[in-house]
Image (cartoon, rainbow, N blue to C red; front, side):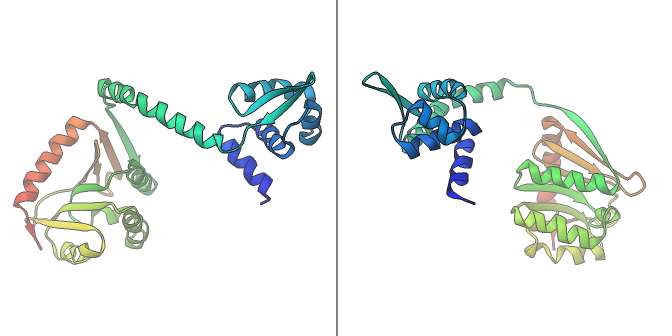
Length: 250
């Protein structure tokens, strides 16, 4: 990529459009320039350049000089972008408390989403990864989720993605020989497990993250029911912590 294209993209990322970026770079290259000189270099008609220059002058990226009755346009040096960024940052810092006030007054969204089948199961996990949580908790038999996807997929994609994002998990798992084998990998998979008594019936895995609780049913019902409700999640998380404090580790 040429340097001019790179600079053009940087200016667009800063908020310029294509024509503004092209005009500013022409101004930097020419120094003091007439509208005709800018038009020749940018290959934009003068009628197009006048309103663009007026906008860029108003925003502080160009300035107008009159020399013996002739108008020249001068692009301000790139260092002023740093000042503009600092000004924006300062202004935004000043209004941050207003966002907090809106957030505290807003009513939390409550809803139910149902994901079905293997594809739905995968979509549900993508939602967890996008949520930004650093931990989730679950009640499980330890093998239910393998009804949805083969173990290599679970291991390779879901667990690897969780490790990459440093998302820890805590699970209350029904004690079975299969679960004990699974729990042996806890230290390498950012997981901590404690056992529920054998023969405890948990036909649906329950997973808690953020303000959401998900019920992952067996292959018979073939669905993930996601409930978004802060009150519900806090209640179930309290139950989880009570059981966690009394459950046995391996």
